[in-house]
Structure formats: C-alpha cells, structure tokens
Length: 263
Image 1 (tube, rainbow, N blue to C red):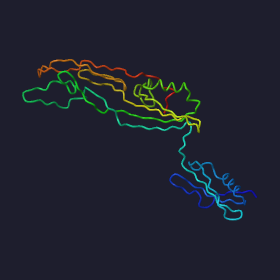
Image 2 (cartoon, rainbow, N blue to C red):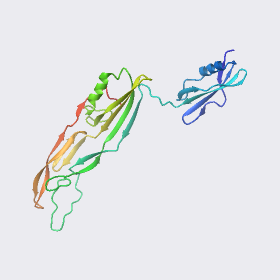
Image 3 (cartoon, one colour):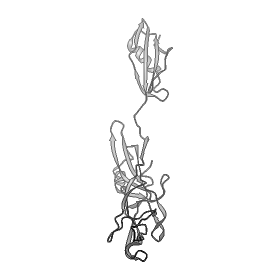
C-alpha cells in the first residue's frame, strides 16, 4: 500500500499572517516516504498565503505519522508587480505679491502708500516672503523583466529626468508633473529589475491677478516673476513700487512619457 496523507481534524489553524495545515499519513514505515506523501498532498499555496514549509513528520505507530505544513504571507515581488507612495508635505516658494491686502495701518499724520499687493516694499526693493505651496511628491516601484530594462531604456530614463509631462498623465494636466528620476537594481535571483520612479506635482494656475494685471496663466512648473517700477502715490505723496509687468518663464523641458513612465 502506497503512503497516503490526509488532512486531519484541527487543521487550518490561522494566525495574523500565517496558516497551518495538519495531516496524518498512513501506509508506510519509511519516514522519507511519509514526507513525500505529505509534500504531494499539501497545496503550493493556501488562502492567499504562500511560502509553503513542510515540517518533519512525527511517527505515531508502525505505519502512522503526523505532519504539518506552514503557509505565510508572501512579501516577494514578481515581475509586473508595483507599489505606490505619496507625500503632500508641500514645498516652499518665495513670493513678492500677495493674494490680497487685508488691512493697512498708518501713523498719525501719514497716509499708508498704495502697495499694489507687493510684500515687504522698501525704498529700493520688494523683499517678499517664503510661503508653503501645494507640492505633491509621489513615487512608484515596479518590477520589470530583464528584457525590458535595456541600456537604451535606461538612457531614456536618464534623458527624461527633469522634464514635465507634455500630455495629460494619470489624472494630472499637462505641465503639472516633474519627473525627478529613477533608480534601479537588478535582482539576479529573480532575473528581473526593481525600479523606483520619483515625481513631484504642482498645479497649473489660471486667472491670477497681480496689481492691475489680470488673467495671468502659469503652468505648474513654470516660473512667475514680477517687474516693478518706481512711481509716486498721489494720496500719500510717497514713492512706491508698482508692478508693471509679469513674466511666466519655462524652466523645465517638456517631454512625452508615453510607453516609458507608468504607474
């Protein structure tokens, strides 16, 4: 009679990240044969758990053995898997123009000069201030087959670093996402690559107002700066800095990420 392993009463014992299957093996006096029968009867995975470990069988009689098989939650990543992380901690930006003037105060006998929304105006400069602005940092980790991550593919990632998205991309408008670069490790045991991609996002803005200028549009990663001119405020009879021009400059290249950068 060939050895036969049968799941026994009290099996399927569960922990927070593991499960244990219990067996009884009949029909052999040979421990190796009992072990082979146990291995053949136990499934490769169970209820979402993998990494099967077969414990040594324990002999209870002439041809009667106990055996157990442990399954744990797998942490191994395979080609095609991916993970995603994000951080909305914000970024710091130096500004010289406020959104609005809440209140101005003046000393007795003086009139507060018009500031036109400028911040920290002195006789010869506009000092501004640093504020926290929306900045969405995120990264994803992917596992790709070795045949995909060629030298040409790695060079493409290198050339795309420091570019913004030319087209709408995964819910972001064109120009809102900046590719900060990639890092990779070849996993020899698995024969694939583990790649990490890093990004930052800043929203496009429309309808901005600076002094008397309205309808200003600024792509997320463009740089907005203001030119001021000395003028005389007739009410206070004081020299003031008046914004007379606003400039929106492109400082990052745009590129198509299609077929290369994916989440």
